[in-house]
Length: 135
Image (cartoon, rainbow, N blue to C red; front, top):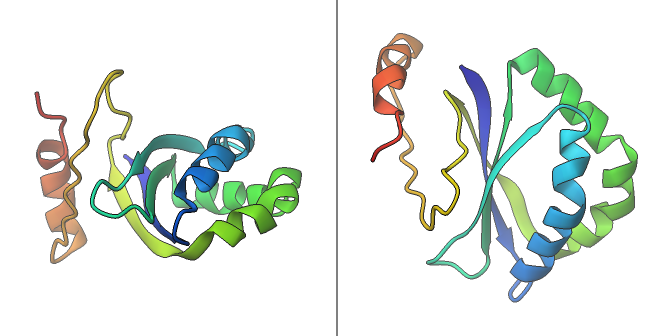
């Protein structure tokens, strides 16, 4: 299982398309270059000031190294002020374990369920069956 971040950004009114354009142009390949797998990127249909996206790492040690490399690297240094100018809050992050997250090509909607198991053993028992794609 990989480590997946579900990130939900609250953006300044009217800034979502600016954030998405910058993200797609600079931050996807910039993160991939340091070993981060960038998954789905979504517009919240109920909130025009929300941008939701996913990224994954094989384990926590890789996550630490990759995030350090990206956030101290040239892509973030060059574009961080423009990105931060679009955001009110970028701290809404859920750290998940799961089998993956890339939707099938042509998928128009994605439903995410966030589970809060009582302990790690409960989650480990649930994840193989409860996180499988639906038809």
